[in-house]
Image 1 (cartoon, rainbow, N blue to C red):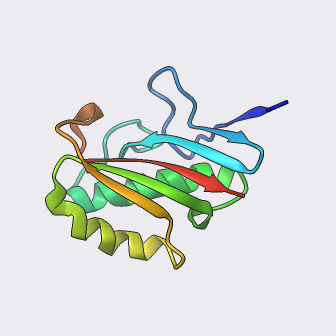
Image 2: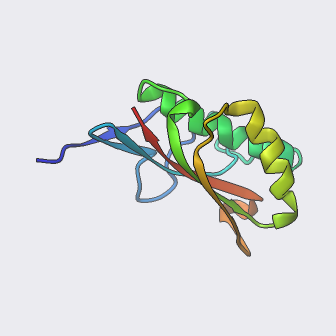
Length: 127
């Protein structure tokens, strides 16, 4: 029988809808989309796209930490950008958080994201 375990931490933004921060099934962790919200205030971080991208990685890492791992456990990363001109910047910043082998990844251009942020990411991790 499949057992779903909810992973929740105060070090990442609380869910703002009918979803969990993450669900662990066996050795797989499914992380919900993270936008650049400050986990304490639930406000969008101030600053440019660089600050937004960094905050999203911090939020994903906090959830991975709660499950007993870190960003290196991520095997699939989906990135949603409101401006694909930021694709190279994503690569640059991602290199600060990940080492090879990098996760499989998709980067998708979208017209709008919640709270009018510029980036959202969801992920699958393996422990």
